[in-house]
Image (cartoon, rainbow, N blue to C red):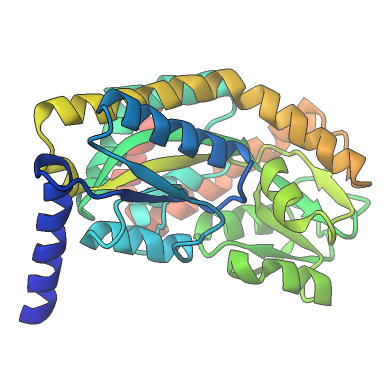
Length: 331
């Protein structure tokens, strides 16, 4: 145990020296998408901007496509200082309260997201506190996509909330996805993202939930026949950074890195709709049927989610705290 603590302390010291010492060290920033995707472009742009603002005192190397490991592992490595940064979903296994960010239909439009995730917004402040408990500084929150369903078989009653759909779909480990999919009438099985393609290919499941147009095109376009843009959740990636590394920066460096993160967030709100439309078109051009999902259908799913999923999820996680979070979400 003592050896582990000494190793962590040495890592933190080295990370701090990367900025404040004479010998600058390149920081690693990982994300889960392939090179050339919106997540990759945003990460590269952020890295370049940090280099520009710090005049080369801080250099960031971007590692796309989970090159640093599965995103859950990367989050753990950030917390101990083995990896400096990442732009990725939050792992809720360590602190289940972070699951609130996956609650179905918590955010229903981009303007609502902006109100709740802007600097000093009450909801954002609470999320930052939860990350801080893991020794992670949440530099920014980057809305990635509205979620949807990718299927090999389209049930006739796909639009009826609660009706038995008769097919099994893959869900992420977080309980919010499983509960929502079950309320919509699907049988579910938790499968890691890295194994989901094989599960679809071999017929273990006939569908996937937990991603959006970008993710389905990048990773599943050859095994998917239908895409339903039901907007079941808004996936917000966190630009996370080791907290000790952040605390070791001087005020100037903190201001410069924070400015680059703020600019990245602002740019995303300008490019979100464009990227969503681009990848929907890519799915369609690849031969995948984009199902016409009306706002009425989405409203039906959202009503079931808020009335049935949210209270049950609150009971499973931390009822007083989750109810508090839901009360401060701006509509």
